[in-house]
Length: 147
Image (tube, rainbow, N blue to C red; front, side, top):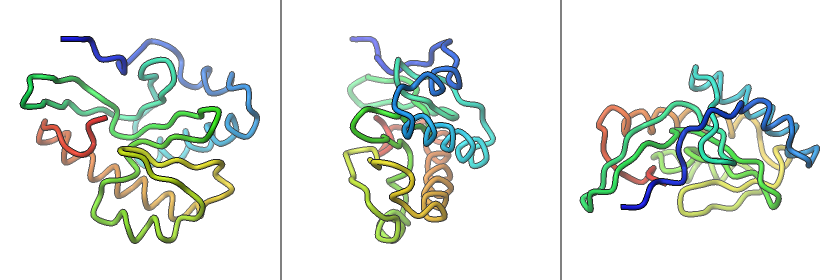
C-alpha cells in the first residue's frame, strides 16, 4: 500500500508561514496560527510540505488504508487559503451562510483572504469543527474528516 503523502514533518511551521512569499497569505497564515492555537490548545506542526496542522486523529478504512491527519489545519496556497477541519459539523450550513465570500471543496473551505469573511463566524466554524473532529479522534474511525 502506498505511503500517505500528508504526514507530520519536523519542519518549523511558524518559520514556513513567515517565509510565504505573498504578503496577504503570510499575514493571514499568522492570524490563523493565533486562532487555531486558541481553539485547539495545540502548537502547529507541518503535515507534508504545505499544510500547517493542529492536533491529530487516526483514521481507518474498511479497505485497510489507515493513517493520521490533522484535525484542524490550513495552507496558504497561491490561489486561496485552504482551511481543513472547518466543515463537516452539524452547524456547517448555518455558519457558512453567514461567513462571507468562500468556496467549499470535498473536505476543505477555500477563502481568498481573511478580510473577505466574518472573523466571528470563522471562529465559530473553527470551534465547532474542532469539537466535531475530536469525536473522530475519540472513536479512532474514518469519517467525513478523512482527507
